Length: 197
Length: 332
Image 1 (cartoon, rainbow over the protein chains, first blue to last red):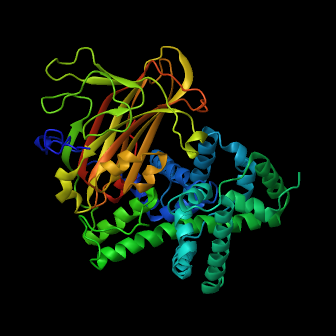
Image 2 (image 1 turned 90 degrees about the vertical axis):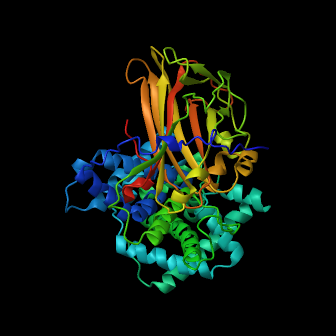
Image 3 (image 1 turned 135 degrees about the horizontal axis):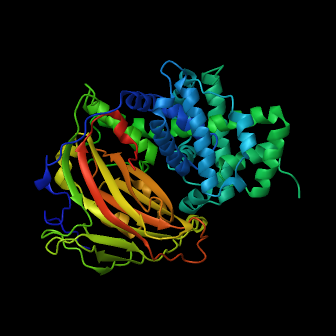
């Protein structure tokens, strides 16, 4: 297979360098909201992932949350709880995403999601501590179990996909993942005795 | 049928294999029992935290290796398990940029390094009219994919014609996971970024894809979703070309996506969809992926398109302007 490498087919033309004057103006309120989003992105990621179990979809939802927060940036008042506002937006975006993808049948009902998460705002400091603790615990996990956790929780592979790639049965992957989660939970509780969100 | 216990249902939820009857059972339990809600909240909180921790664990492993000089920012070896997911790669982009630019990038104005229109022909860039080659592209700068065709836009100059890319027929991926999603008409183009390697290796380059989709139906009808996606990869494209699937985005160093939903009619028949990603210093090439699909189709019958097209596709590489550039943004 030949990939042509001549400048003629390298589609980004250097001739056009600096031909354009980029727009540098930016709304300060929009910038502030986007900065706060970045500051709290892990809390929001964890929050969305607690409502939507498909991690590939979680990434898409988080992008929608970013866009919605940007569009609604003037609805937020500086000095109020940004994370509480962003979590409300994230919850609605998640439900909206699940509706659009026709996933509602195998998801929690909207009234149940409200019961579970309606009044919850993650504690950013506690959350960062717990993520750091979990990273330590991941280092203590057996290599095979860690690979399963990385495949499931980082690479967003389903137990069925993992099973087909490593030659296990899907049920064996689920059982091993469950054991790994128990180990990590116990390890996390041991290293941080009283975590609260 | 025996009702599964709460622990089994929570485990099924975490593994994303909850069936609709199990979801009904879980909803009923959570509605009626505050204790069950607390158990579920605790388990799913942990599930979300583990997602963050696993990504961070991988990214920190890479950042540590950068800091120790174990990985060259241009062409270093990569351990087999380091196949980054989307968010992690975005986060890694930020982490690595911070390592490379300790004074921050927020105060640097953006600068366009290069811009190219992928539907405009020129002496350097021939675009053949007619049906697109089937399958994944085998060359840089070539459109190919599912059944679709290239037409010259009426009124465009003959010496530098502009083209419209008409979606024609959705096809279904053969993988098991893909069977759950509607059939889609996918078209691709590979973009070689190696001429920008020096700038990309600094870790401060963003790549923006802008695609102008048109739904020319006069009467409103079935919903069609147009998607503009951008992936950045390292290495050579053959590996991606040989085994492209919907999961290949997990192989990408970074990824961005945005979409436009249309039901036709006179309201907003066209939309410029933009998406932008920060390029990891290892990036060698990008993949432009345009999609049209009807969310109602279940994949058993291939959807056909007649009036849905993309009128303009532009790709722009810039030095980044602020820390907010790493995630997709839309300017409809």
